[in-house]
Each structure stands twice: as C-alpha cells, then as structure tokens.
Image (cartoon, rainbow, N blue to C red; front, side, top):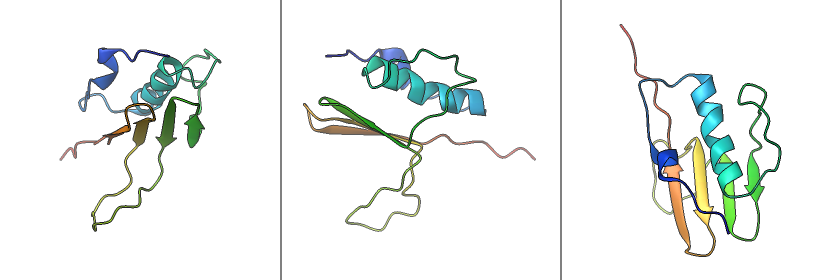
Length: 97
C-alpha cells in the first residue's frame, strides 16, 4: 500500500497557476499508485476519476452532500477506502486589484 508524503498537503495559494493545479493530482495519483505513467507535469492531464482497491481520487467533480453548501466542487477529492477518510482540496486564486 502506498504511503502518502506530507509535502502533498502543502496548500500554497500564492502560486496557483495551472502547473501547480495539475501537479498536485498527479503527485497524489502516483503516491497512491493510481497511475504508472511518470509523464512531466506539463503533459499530464488529470482523469476525472482514478481508483484502485485502496484509494479513490476525484478531480474537478461536484460533491453531493446532505446540507446545502455554496461551493461544493472541490478541485481534488481524495478518499482512503481502508480508513474511510476523505480529504478535499480547493485551489483559490487571489483577486488582484
């Protein structure tokens, strides 16, 4: 079973360009052994759903909840099937004036 590295949890909102957005799901998918292709981040296009017997990774998918939530579309939803835990990641781009 894959062990996820703590540096994947860093939420760097100061550098939120497409490279950073595409790089995080690729790193998660590689760490969870959901993909085998080690292509460069600039050539990688995340699949909407990746899963194996231990993990499930959603990229840019709406989430159904029992309560109304204004923003229910996280960029990354990562589920550990063994521990039954779910992690959400939402990339936020600051507004520059």
